[in-house]
Amino acid sequence: MTKTDAMGGTAARDLTQTLLNALTIMMLMAVCLWVMRPFAGALVWATMIVVATWPLMLRAQRWFRGRRWAAVALMTVALLAVFVLPVLVAAGTLIANLDRMSAWLQSTVAAGLPGPPSWTSRVPLVGASIAEKWTTLAATPPAEIRDQVAPYGAAIVRWIAATIGTVGATLVHLLLIVLLSAILYTTGDTAAKGAIRLARRMGGASGEGAVRLAGQAVRAVALGVVVTALAQTLLAAIGLFVVGVPFAGALTAVILIFCIAQLGPLPVLGPSVAWLYWSGSPGWGTALLIWTLFVGTIDNVLRPVLIKRGADLPLLLVFAGVIGGLLGFGMVGLFVGPVVLAVTYTLTKAWVEQGEPSVPAAPEATALPIA
Image 1 (tube, rainbow, N blue to C red):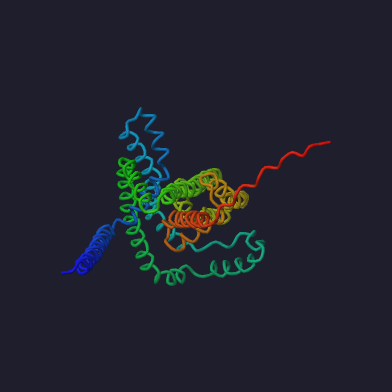
Image 2 (image 1 turned 135 degrees about the horizontal axis):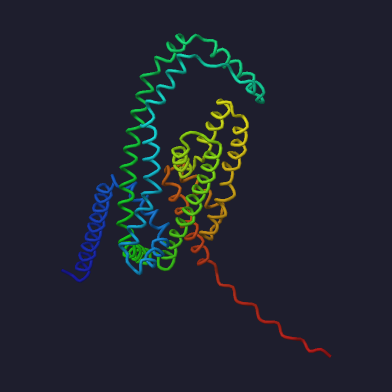
C-alpha cells in the first residue's frame, strides 16, 4: 500500500468516525429531550423563576449567615405563597360557595327578576337597549324563565367539573415548578458555571456575554411583570375592600393570577362595578369604576420603567419579545421571547462590529503660534 492510499484510508476512517460520533450525540440529545418532554414546561418556568429571583436568594442566604438550606426553604415558601396559595384560595372559595350560589340562583328565578333601576336608561349609548331587554326579562313569568334555563343546567355542571379538574392539574403543575425551583436554588451555582463554560466553548467571549445578557433579560421581564402584577393586585384589593364587594379576598387572588397572566384586573373589577350598580349602590359603583380605570392602565407606565431598570436593552425589543412570546409560546413566552430577541440582537451587533475595519484615531491638533 502506498503512502497516499494509507493517508486516504485514514482520512476516510476519521470522517466516518466523526459522522458516527455526531450521529450518536444527536441521538442521545433527542432521547434526552424525549425523556424530559413531560417536565419541559415546568423546567423552563422553574429556570426563569430561579434566574429572576437569584439575587433575592443570595440576600436571604446572607441573612441566614451563609446557610443555603435556610435560604432555599424561605424562597420555596415564598413561591408557594405567590403561585400556589392564590389558586387554592380561589378554588376553595368557589367550592365552598357552590351551594350558596345555586340557592341564590334558584330563589332569584322563583321570585322573578326585579325591574331595571332608574339609572339604567341614563347609561350613554347602551342604556336604552339594556333597560328595554331588562324590562322584557323581568316581565317573563318565573316558570318560563326556569324552562329556558333548564337546558343549560347540564352544561353548567359539566363546565364546573371541567374547571375543578383544570384547577387540580394547574396545582400539580405549580407544585412541580416549585419543587424544581427548590432544586435549582440548591445547585444553581454549578448550573450557572456549566452554562457559562458551554457558551464560552461555543462562542468565546460573545457566547459568555450572551448567557449573562439572557439572565439580565429574564430579571428585567420578571421585575416588570411580577412587580407590576403585585402593584395592580394591591390597588385592586384596596378598591374591592373599601366599596364592600363580597368575597373580596378570593377576588384578589383571582386578580393576581390574571395580572401575572397579563390579562389585567379588568375581568374581575368590571363585573364588580356592574354588581354594585345592580345592587343599588351607584355611588360606590362610580367610585370603583374610576378606580378601575386607574388600576387597569397603571401598568402601561409602571412596567416599562421597571423593565428598563432591569436590563439596558431597547424598550421596543423587550416589548416585542413579551408580546410575541406570549402569542407564540403562551405564558412562558413572556420570558422566552425577550431572552431570544435580546441574545440574537447582542450576537448580531457583536458580529457586525467585529467585521468593521478599525478607524485610526485622528491626530491631535497642534497649537498654532500666536504672533
